[in-house]
Length: 246
Image (cartoon, rainbow, N blue to C red; front, side, top):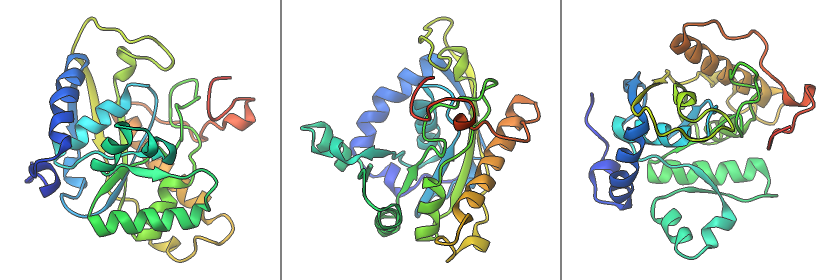
């Protein structure tokens, strides 16, 4: 494995968090990380994983840390004003999201900060747990693609599988047996060059997002040894909310 980035080797609050989160996650998951070479060791990036378990942000974060980068997520701007929590979010460089602010303007500001500080961010393109009955990635939202295009930042698809063994979607956390195998597969960056400068054109963001979701689905199919569905699940066509359960 390549050398870790300076953001991991330099002392930070992440060291304390890792000392807590890594052993905790290790009780539940025996993590196998494949494709680690596809995550750049320096510079900005947008990591886009599938989302099928309430536990998987921990496995994705630990996998990112093991590869050599500091895992950062999007967080509601209001959380940054909460005492102690807000200070921790700022200290670790989490990315604030302001509700109601223009998507394009917000993405540009976020991208500029990522590039300026050579940081990455983990963005779940589905926005919530998948509603697909067979737990495949569902229709994606444009946030990850918009952010990558705004800063010409590598957009890296990720698929993971195995968390459902100890914390199925909307299920309870199972402590035994421990050390269930979880596979994280990091793909090569999505080629968005044909969309550059066209973000404001009708349908461009949806087309780029479809490309991202297709690759995440392909990676997940590789892990599962199955062929993903041709058409991704669309909650709006099945009377489901995209922000919660039915």
